[in-house]
Image 1 (cartoon, rainbow, N blue to C red):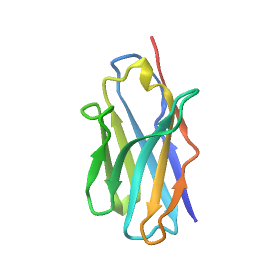
Image 2: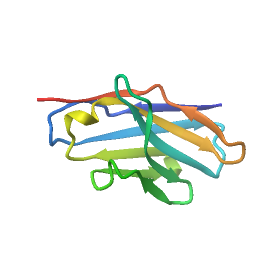
Image 3: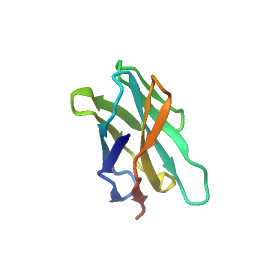
Length: 117
């Protein structure tokens, strides 16, 4: 099993920034990908960005240029730097990890991000 714990969420005004962190522990395969997703009220969970253990990163078009994913393999931690936030970014943000030997997915408990004036 893999445990994921997110932190860094909260409330921010439009135009503000937040950095989310997610620490993974447990049975982490050396080749894996960590990711950030979000789910707004009444909407499906959507992928935001992926960072592989090999150092490759991908961002979906909706957040490209505003959000940046990064990871520290030594600390089994993934980050999501979010800039120029707007009210449409309000959602519960989830960290994910996929072990690429078994293609098993694990999820954090989610953390709320609220953007409002």
